[in-house]
Amino acid sequence: MDCQVNKSGSAMVIRVSGRLDAVTAQDFEKQCTEILNGGENNLVVDLSGVEYISSAGLRSFLVVGKKLKAANGTLSLSGLQGMVREVFEMSGFATLFPEYPSVEEAIEAAG
Amino acid sequence: MTGGETGFAAVSGIEKNRRTLLAYAPVASSDWSVGVVIPEHELFADIKTLNHTVLGIGAAGFAILFFSVGDVSDKGVPAALFMAVTKTLMKGIAERGLTPSQVLSRVNAELCQNNDSAMFVTLACGVLDISTGELQYSNAGHNPPVLIKKDKPPEMLPMPPGLVLGAMEDAVFKTNSIDLKTGDRLVLYTDGVTEAMDENKNLFSENRLLEIISGMKAPDPELMVKDIMNAVEAHASGMPQSDDITVMALYYKKK
Image (cartoon, rainbow over all chains, first blue to last red):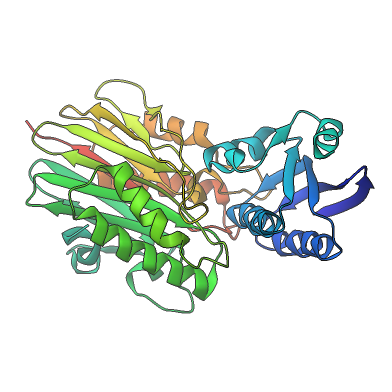
């Protein structure tokens, strides 16, 4: 799993690639938490490079989402495809976060 | 979830398969029978290895069968405790004669209290009226069960949408309903089945599950779970799996 982080407009864009499983989810959560602790509260997570996500991976989204909610922030998604989309839809997680067709549209929506 | 759940360990004829370290436990009455395959440590609660599967079957006066299969996110002792709490809630709430979605709503509300660690459970549950064959079922972010109508190819049971339990207090659940006829079967499972990986990280997949079930001749649910397990094992070919594998098969045979 690899995360590339860029600031774009008022949003922090996190491009995740690889596998979000029990091992790597903690790392993803840690990186997101560090971004939040730095005062950012608009996160756009691009999942187009993610090939696999487990329930531990989903849980890290819930953790980060809860922290952002408490800080009046947002977590937006883009790039859901294949198995990752299936998992987000089956688990109901797709209803928890706003989703955009592209990173650019997610950034724009963040203002 | 009255008799069956606690009854598993006491069911006679539990057969231990040393190769997989899994236990098979058949449960039956004259009108229905259930086969389950669950990780061995589910039966012999060792706190260090306690798995994260929630599973229960119970019969109230042999007229209503309540069943559920679920999966807790994450592993280890906190996940095991979360599982234990979920099971206890399911048991207590399911005994009150509610619809499956009402059961899920109440269990969810309880699990959301003080859930700072953001754990969650995916769960599918159903209530079968043994005398009429009416099956009511609901979904909390779980894999769709496989429905095998007598003499028809297996299909994924259309599940109502529903968020995993423990994630959001105001999550809404729905109950769907179908009529089972004599000879109909249902297979519930955790994602450890469909996401079992071979050495090239290829998933077992829903399609493969449907294929395996399609090729089954015997309606015996105990044989069904064994056949599914053997196929998953053959796919995994000895690779360590990250998720627990649970399968429950239900056979409705009321005349």
